[in-house]
Structure formats: structure tokens, C-alpha cells
Amino acid sequence: MAEARARGRPRGFDEGRALDAAVRLFRAEGYDGAPVDRLCREMRVPRATLYDLFGGKEGLFLAAVARYADTRIAPVLAALGPSGTLRDDLAAFYDAVLALATADREAPGCLVSCALADAAGSNTGFRAELAARYAAMERRIAARLMAAGWDVQAATQPKAAAALAASIARGLMLAARSGTEAAQLRPTAEAAVGALLALHPEGSPGHG
Amino acid sequence: MAEARARGRPRGFDEGRALDAAVRLFRAEGYDGAPVDRLCREMRVPRATLYDLFGGKEGLFLAAVARYADTRIAPVLAALGPSGTLRDDLAAFYDAVLALATADREAPGCLVSCALADAAGSNTGFRAELAARYAAMERRIAARLMAAGWDVQAATQPKAAAALAASIARGLMLAARSGTEAAQLRPTAEAAVGALLALHPEGSPGHG
DNA sequence: GTGATTTCAGAACAATCGTTCCGTAACTTG
DNA sequence: CAAGTTACGGAACGATTGTTCTGAAATCAC
Image 1 (tube, rainbow over the protein chains, first blue to last red):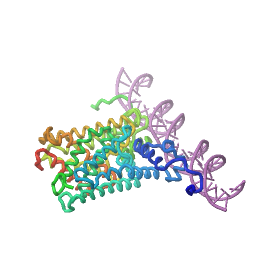
Image 2 (cartoon, protein in one colour):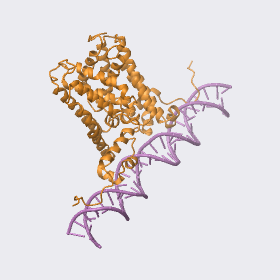
Image 3 (spheres, rainbow over the protein chains, first blue to last red):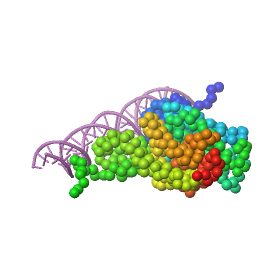
Image 4 (tube, helix red, strand yellow):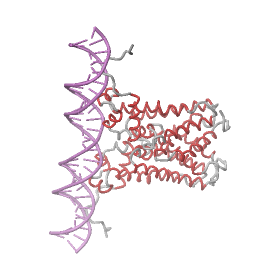
């Protein structure tokens, strides 16, 4: 027996795939640089449906950011484990950051730290979204540091160390945007791991 | 005797001030988000003159970036000295980064790491400009580290440490863009100084 | 089959976009 | 003064922009 379907004409596109296409275009061209005409074409979504589904260009942009966070940023954060020593997990985290930042040779970089950050200049909704995304990343990193026994009473609190680790990730994303290759960014990532571990209160470089 | 003037009608605006206005608008709205109409109005520059002087919107944007680098980024880099210990100079550098990143409450952040980075997505000229700006900053930081005796044969080379320091600065700029206040970013900056100094081959925290 | 519902193709809209152009204005030179 | 030069105000241009609308298409329920 065929599965029950909602009434009305069936959709001619897959929403996930459509959002992936929007992610690509927004990341390459930015928010203002990606016209709705072109978004509709590359998403293969009819104009009226785009407005029905997302309310307009702003809603689409936020949906694309959410899609990017769920499909691209979440795996990067998952690399933090805990699945090995803190050193191993930080190294895996930055490897994942570099892989994400340089995945698209045509338009390297990050939807959040390039397009959303720019659009956040004068759009309060986008700025709130940017703040929420950055806060979520820093919380995740801080949780990993504390799972490694990083004491909140330490000289460098886990929260500050996590903010530093997130800052480094954002800076790497921007370097990739400028065309720097992953191989060239690797020494920086390695230096980052060493530097962060040196802040660890236990001082043990491989502390898990 | 009055100073000799070039022939023709005198200009009705100051080019430096005009570019400062362009910097403000581009930083707040981004490249695509800042219309030429509004740029002319806020710069107080006639449209035809803008095209004569800068060739068009792209040329104006690059001129604004150059103005920003000369008037805003150069003082930040000057804070590196050498005018004190390496620790003091790094602390002064990040203080200056935070001051610059949070100077405009309406549109915090950095023209280079927010607007130029976004516009660099699909404009090869802008991407080259972004790469040049980042390379210049990293060179300047590396020179300061080497002036402090950082050995190029060290486990973490001065070039990698400088790239890390620049990455952190960029990440702080983006955090400011999301609305984070300077006071909240200070612990991150302090952790950055400590982390960088821990990479120093001499291992002496205040090494000059 | 009809009616209801959802989706679609395409047109239309007012406003905006970056660029060009031209007559007038404001100066210097001879 | 006239001629030459540079700057300006404002209009014009073709193209683009985000949004809305409508009749047709594709489905389900009765």
C-alpha cells in the first residue's frame, strides 16, 4: 500500500539539496551578492515556493546557515570527541576546520565567518544569528576542555581557552578565503594545538 | 604669494575624509550592500568625480581598503614595537586589535576581515587584495618575533607563530562583529599572549 | 467526475543598481 | 577678456533587484 501523501501537487525538488545549493551560492557571493533569480535557478525551486517556504530572502539565508551548521559545522565539532587525548582531538578539530575551509576551491571559506559575518554589519537579525553560532561553538569546545579536566579555577579558564580556540578556527577560515591552501595552513594549526595545550593547567601535553 | 594651484575648478571635498566615509559605509553594509548613490552622498563626492577618481565602485572599494590599512591597521601593527618586552608588545597589539574591532558600536568589526573577505568570494581582484593584506600583517608580526630572538630553526617557526597570532587577531575581529564587547574579549586576548609566548623557543614569558 | 489543496511557470511591479553623459560652474593662463 | 582645464549637478540609461500575483498543473478526498 502506497504511503499516505499530503493533498496537492507534489514538490519537484528536495529541500535539503535545494538548501545545499543555496549554501554554495551564498558562500561564494555573499548575502547581497546572491540574487533571488539565481538562487531559484540553482536551487531548482520556483520563486513563489521559495517565498512560501522561507518567507523571503532573509529567511532563506538563515535556513541556509542552519543547513550549513547541521551538515558542515557539526562534524567539525564532533571531531573534538572526546575520542582520544586532548591533543589528538584538538588536532582532529583543526584538521576538520582546514578541510571545511578549503573544500571549495572556487569559493573557499565559511558561510558563517564570511557571508554571515559580512551581512551581520547592519542586519540585527543576522548579527544575533552570528553571535549564537559563535557562542555554540565556544560552548562545545569549552565542554571538551572541561572533559579533559581543565579546571574552571585555572589561570586560563576553559571558557577563555575555548574562545581562543574558536578565534583561531575563525582566523583559519579567513586565511582560506584569501586563497591560502590547506597545506600552508597546517603549520599554523599545529602551532595552535601546541599553544592551547601549553595553557592547560596540568601542563601535560597529551592530557586526555 | 598664494601657493600655485593646478588649473581648473577646485575640488569641493577632501579625499581623505571622503575615503573615511566610504570605509564606514563599506564596513557596515559590505561591498554589494553599499550603493553608489549612498556612497556619493555620504562621501560628499559628485558621482562623475567618483568615477573619474576611482574608475568605478571596485576601484573605490580598493581605495577604501588602502585608506583603512594606512589609518587603522598600521597603528595596530605599530603597537608591536619593538618598544618593550615581547609580552608587552603582544599585549599592546591585541589591545589595539580589540580597540579597532569594537570602535564602532553600530558596525563593529574590520573592513578587511568582514567586508573584503566576503567580497573576495568570487572577485579574484578582491581575493588577491585580501591575500596581500593578510600576508603583510603576518610578515610584520614575524619580524617582531624574530627581533625578539625567535629562531627560525625553532620547533615552532616564527612564520607559523606569526600566522597563528594573525589568525587570532582575525578571529577576534569576527567575534566583535557578532556584537561581543571588548571587555568580554579581553580574557581571550590575554590567553592568546600567554599561548604565543609558550611557543617561544626560549620559553621565557617576558622575553624581549 | 467535482471540489479542495498544494505547487508551479511566468509575468508584472516599483524600486534600485552601476555607469555614462552633458551643460554649467569655477578656476588658471595668456 | 577669451580659451583651456578641471569639477560639478543632475538627468538618463539598460539592467537588475526582491516581492507579489494569477492561471494552469498535479495531486487527494469524496
